[in-house]
Length: 262
Image (cartoon, rainbow, N blue to C red; front, side):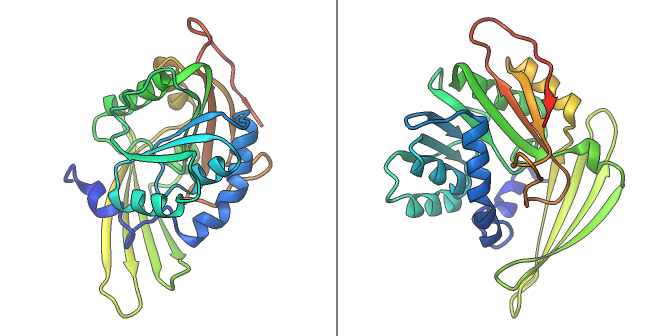
């Protein structure tokens, strides 16, 4: 697979994080983030990757100062349009493997399975180290992804989704085991009166144990987990069981932690 597959998948015709369905879920998800990240007016938050900014803008409207980072020009253009009246939200184009920030943020988020797409697992580690470096001592990080342990019961799955624009998406996922398990996912988009679109991506598989190990190696101590971006239920989002992990950057040195589940 070409290393540039992200350019064919992360575009509005195939996938947009600013879909009506995603926007509808974002208000409840933002309330959850505000609570578990212990945010308040004036808190500084890093959203990477931020997509079209639906969480970043809602956090900013609550009074946080938010920096959204994303590699997609298309997504960032929408975030900036929507954020014209949110002066405390800023959006910049960047690669999440190369975060050049240090000790600036009270909290950071990586949402809706926006992690594990790189061919080299070391790139995942670079991403987490960069996020840890960007946090203030004691800062919190929340990551939300497909729970590979829970989704790995079937080698092959198919799922039809109807979108608000009248199109249909067929998602076909193949689970690949081994020392570095992955999900190979192909999307077919059927649009009324328009050509069929297809795109494929590969997602590295993270369950609870593997994610905890990756966070600890990056200098982040796991604190708690949830099955979705809500205290009492899973959130509507990308297909598959969810794993939401809250981690903390130690105030000084390294702190071990026993993560609990809500």
